[in-house]
Amino acid sequence: MTDTAETPETAGHVADSFKGHWVNTRAPAAWRPYLRMARIDRPIGWWLLLLPCWWGTLTAALATGFRPFDLWLIGGTFLGAVLMRGAGCTWNDITDRHIDGSVARTRSRPIPSGQVSVKQAIVFMAAQALVALLILLTLGPLAIFLGVLSLALVAIYPFAKRFTWWPQVFLGLAFNWGALLTWAAHTGSLSLPPVLLYLAGISWTLFYDTIYAHQDAEDDALIGVKSTARLFGDRSPVWLQGFAALAVVLMSAAVILAALPDASPLGIVLALGGAWGMGWHMAWQLMRFRPEDGDTCLMLFRSNRNAGLIPVAALILAVLVR
Image 1 (cartoon, rainbow, N blue to C red):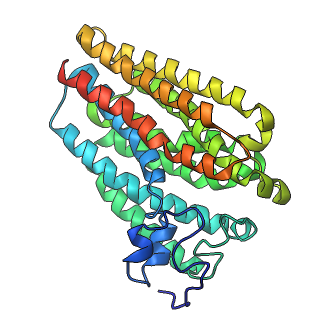
Image 2: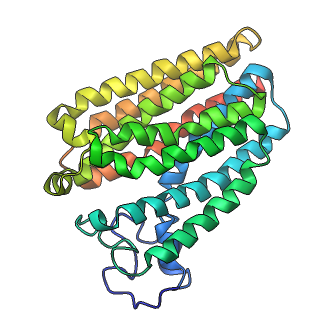
């Protein structure tokens, strides 16, 4: 553990942390840099990783019926999402440590601020990934294969902003992989519905992470980091509308194909209501989107937990009436 004394800049939180979070107020001081590096004080990230896992589980249950193992899928993916999001963020902080030190919002992170060394971060990342692997090993051969395969996406993502204007696509590929993995864990196979659900999640990620990236657009321009926020500029609202619409259409197609022919008409209507309810939430975000207002961008980004929970709630009801 690093014994570096915490300064006023780093003592309570990093720049985009929840100010009153228990990590910043009650966790032992020696643990805080590691908990922040895993983004435990910023839970929106693991929510956004977890929700596609739940979509995949519940859509598979809509297709073939609920199984007791699905309860473990729901609980296990919760733990796995927290761990793998923490490991991914630690890897991101290791690879971005020099960039983070040049950006106002990220220079107080544990590595660039000197609270954690790179070697310590690597050990911490490996420990999180190992526990997540133990959970993955309970999910069946195809799911295990898909989980291992996802590591390539996790490894590539931090570098994407260096070589493409579309790093949000790589985030979407990584963050929505759980839709494929949990469908495979439930059914033992893959088919068109989980692929459509995966693509819907990628469109959703392009939506919310473009909003998020507008916080850093000016700093990113100064240091040469690429993003869809910089690429779209003033036309971001138009692109965001397209991503939102595509997410709704793809998710609607996924649940219809999964539900037919066995689910009840009411179950299909409920599942569709979840997709369109998420679309309504994204429309609400668009009405409040101000690309130059960083605080509003962060608030809207965080609100996507609620957007993604709408299909979860609808799919639970659809499975119950199946």
